[in-house]
Image: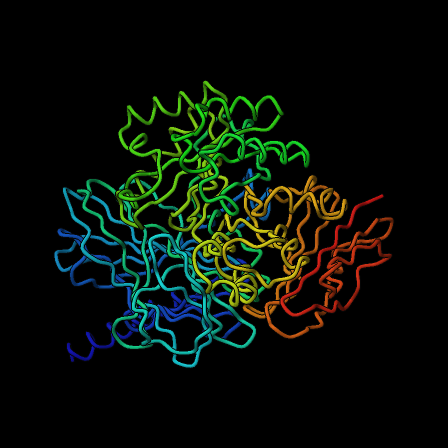
Length: 613
């Protein structure tokens, strides 16, 4: 009889726990979380979209042999903040927060905290009372059924790979980088990533090295001793339609608020950029002058003095180049080697930022001579050392009123909210690859049509767009395609790739457009698209809407545009399109209305600028 009562009690406890888990829902009820086995299942409108089949975190002192205790609702979490760059300058969001309580084999507590937003789910592990603990492993596993369409990137230190469409795991790429886009149900998408990297944390990636359907979350190397309270970064799943994914600000919503008291000096903008056409151009004062003059002519706010400025020719120095830029009303940015990634055989300057005292001295000097920001290159991946180093760089730069652009670096994970002087991050297979390999030529158009749904969702992307001429390897995207990228791709520092003479040879309307191009947006909407096929995005700055579209395929395409949210009455609409003629490639005209259908050339594009009269 006692055994029957005990069994009934256990069943009742299980039923209560399950009933509680079903009540974990987003504020609008669209998303629901349910405990299942050793993990959790997330549903969208009643359909399962993500199976977190296993959970757990293990340190040297806590986490072995977890036993579930209960799930409880903590309350609502609201995000309402301002950004200095991004797809939306005033993001807002709200979530229902739940805590899933566990104890390990020694009775020590481990908490798994879930936040259910209307556009996705965030979760992290929280530990307390640690004493010199070492992070051993995380047991989180996403089980993605075979046959599910997915766009995943092979991991690399600098996140510079393609996002090929596949329907199966178990391939040769065992380590995958965030973000990863899935389509678990037709028309419903999930974008996996992480956010809010803090000190004492490493970033993570996905390993598909067991069952083909299992992708385990694995933090990179972290050798610090963990004391007191500690938590992982947020694991993120943005969920919904393609528009829900593209327009989401979930990565910054869960990140720490801005740590800077004064941000008035932080200004986004377009940058004149030397490297694409002249690999070693920044050691030549006369070439730098040419790019400064180009920036002055087109009223671009910034010019980048790239690598090797410490080896300036003809008796000139970087101070001469900085002073020349300032004399023309152009704010100079300068490049540094982080000296933790590619060092031997790499360009300089090197070893000026690694020690705190050297970093303070260098950035103070930059501030003194009038440098506006720094581009820091060649990091060595997602490990905790790199994460702490990046945080120290952003904080030190902010003390000296310097903007930051991380290159050869991991993807954004929410720092753009916490440290708004971080205006750009590479972490993308971008246009500089026309300098390196022939591969990009044939794959660029489809890749460009994938990035708005993957990499650029999570933060600023320094792809360095827009080239009408060729670098070492040719491009076969059209002029309108290239121009559209300046709007389609979001970055707080938008570096223009091409030569000054190429830009200045374009029609005056193109030059005027670049002169007025914003690099931060009040609103962003996905108009149409299919990853790898085509993409149309509308962005607003003030009272002006920009609608940019590209065709990622090698065939002509007619794209339907539904943008009823843009009121075109009493507006001037300027259209940039491809003529299809190589001798006169542009078709630029004023139109009366935004069309419902647009015909695109193979690898072509279009752009509409809609201004109130």
